[in-house]
Image (cartoon, rainbow, N blue to C red):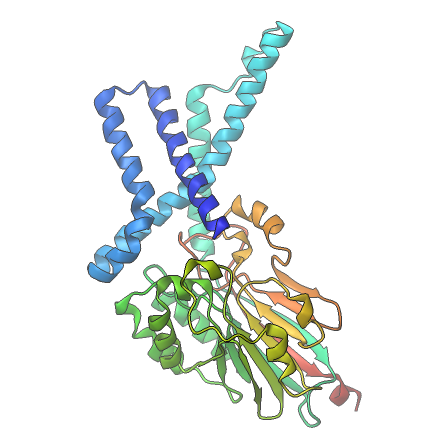
Length: 385
């Protein structure tokens, strides 16, 4: 929640920064300032109204409203730091002129250029990022273990993370995921949260498409933060109708072959959105599963509970999106200890953090292509034999 609030404060300041920058460079009059200010306010505040409008407005209008508002957000996110960097450079040069009494004015960037250069960079980055967000990449991971039963040489697991089905992501995004899952023919399918982005009635039919994909060992899912934001009851209903077994702080032994446990996202426990949360700790959930069997922990956020180490073999997470948009992805690597990809942990445990298949907010990805993860859990005892 603190990250969410911090982003919104920074986003608001970025819009103000653009307003004053344009107003000063072009010496706008009072009426032009009012018109420009109203436009900035409308675009900046549109994400606040997208959820309610999507519930009450028409499907087409909702998508146009959301697309324009989120693309504006992506523009500001890229524009602001570049513009601030150029303005900071000019400020340093001006201070050098004042301190040293030398004429460095020839290397000062003109004020219009401090607007148009970051404008062009932002437009270019976001056009590229819009198309990058559509290029689903299949990431493959091999995990060797001695904890699979004899006669089982390997288990293929498909991880769907952060699909964010909603106003922006719909049929096209889901069809690509379904196609790649069909190609992989997994034994087990898991969703590690944020399957839904928002509560939108006219996307409920997508549950039928998800229901059509199956795996011999079943389909399991956990709740992410966006399932809470969009409405927990609607999310639980959608996930169930999609054919997933929802693991809300519990675990299952699947056919005596593999353990799968899942926990609700608890990142914003204090905001009053969490309900029906079992009191069992993550360690207690895992400890209650059969021992000596390969155990997968489904957990939306990529934080690792040290008390659980030794009770699971592989934690599958998402949430980070690897930052999704430049330059946010330069910051998220410091915010999240486990930012993206595979990492070994203590006590023979490991974690894999997916970049996610969809987008949160702007339908843009830059240096963070969407992914579907295919994990091969290989029985080394069978290989040795």
